[in-house]
Image (cartoon, rainbow, N blue to C red; front, side):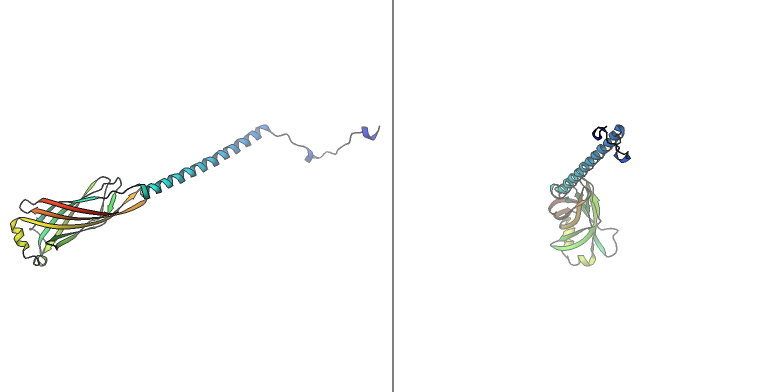
Length: 216
């Protein structure tokens, strides 16, 4: 027998044996990889949505949302003479109305109101801090006391009081802010100057003219 006809004998080596792949395990691995790809895509999509939402909130909160200035006016002004503290001869009891025209809450600090007669200050008082809900009206009560010493500087005021008609000027300052989406603060300052005519006998306002300016 010739050497060409004799098949070469190759020694057995386990490393050279290729194991047949299990189709069940292969399919499971493919499914796991597919789920991982879907989860990655879902995560990327969620991040993209959150980024877009954040950009929209910032844009609306800082630029698009227009803050409407609160409206203020004097609702009533009464003069009180009885049961007053010592050295107080006259009390001006005023009620101011603050109307919030925004769709969010208006927060305001302590206000300052001064009352003038003939260009000279009669009295002043600070109002409490607080807040006004969206589209709501807040009633702010103020007591402005005129002392004997202060009244001595207005000798002709007594005659006006006897006439039963009195014209006063008032100025009120309110500093506050609104919060858009609970995150973005918009500062609002309200200044109101009023000329008020009073009927002292009826204790009513017969005429009122107010000029309001707002800094946003």
